[in-house]
Amino acid sequence: MASFSNKRVVVIGAGIVGASLAYHLASQGAQVIVLEAEGIASGVTGTSFAWLNTAHDAADPVAHLRSAAIAEYHRLQTELPALQIRWNGALSYGAEAGSMPPGTLVSREQIRTLEPNLKHPPEQALHAAAEGALDAVAATHALLAGAQAHGAQVFTHTPVVDFLLAGTTVMGVETATGIIEADMVVLAAGTGTARLAAMLNAPLPITASPAIFIRYKTANDLVKGILSSPQMEVRQGADGCLLAAEDYLDDTPDNQPAAIALRTAEAIQDELHGVTSIVTEFACVGWRPMPADGVPIVGYLPNISGAYVCAMHPGVILAAVVGRLASEEMITGKPSLELAPCRPDRFLSTTSA
Image 1 (cartoon, one colour):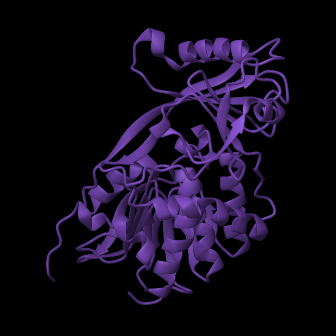
Image 2 (cartoon, rainbow, N blue to C red):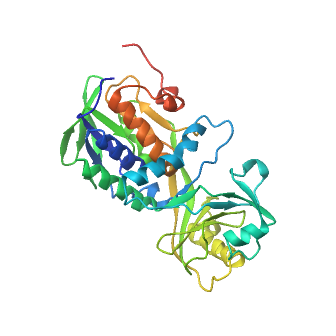
Image 3 (tube, rainbow, N blue to C red):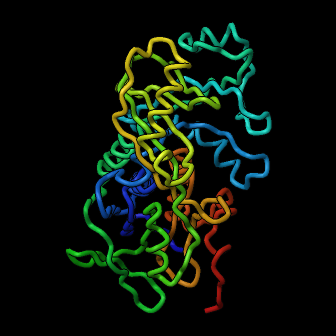
């Protein structure tokens, strides 16, 4: 693949993954256009708990990417001062030993120092001091602003309706307002990526995996870092709101987001001092793009030229490292060894030209 420095690249999707790709591509000299069918961060990015952690299963084929995530976000912070991340650490306890994230074992006395508002601190917990969290929507805007500073253009409410093809080569995209020619088109539209790939006769097994995201209006400074226990997974936002993440159970009335938000609020009141009032501001189901085997799908689509795909969960955690690696791969034409387990051709048969 020839170098794409100074070439025209269309990135479809303005969530945090698409924004990271746009920033890294534009900063390396590509002429980038970002197309978003709705608004910036209007998909799963806007409903992400956005805990930046490195937890992974020992057999995870992309463990190396997860392990690099925090360092890559520190790099981005040096490049983009507007990117705000709260590196306040995470405290985890109560889960089965095999599912606990990495961290330093701390005592009840230390837990009280780390999280003084816990009513029932456990005897011990794991503390990951290097971990943090960000506002995924604000981070997406910061990345896109960084891309625009390098000449990128961003168009919202501009869905792609078709691709411009010359044989088996993608030459651009068609939107409701016209055709945009490109040397490379990148599919980074979250759960919409599968539909776009199917339009190129490249069916990818990406499902929409649900999770519950909740915002509460309550007292400030209830939680210093991130708290993860069987009772609750919460953190304080930069604006003072309390954020919570819960598993999606089913679509029965008792398990609708509003009902789960009420139960979680009760758990928060039981577990934390200082919760004199807690009001649900927002509760919804967020739909995460989940490849069939759980491994990110990153790379060139086989049997067609000029199309690159980037679909993954956890998108927020991996956005910085994958954004850099994928953009370098497209710019230099040199395959990234780090992305080798992620190739889309593991789902798609390849044929000789």
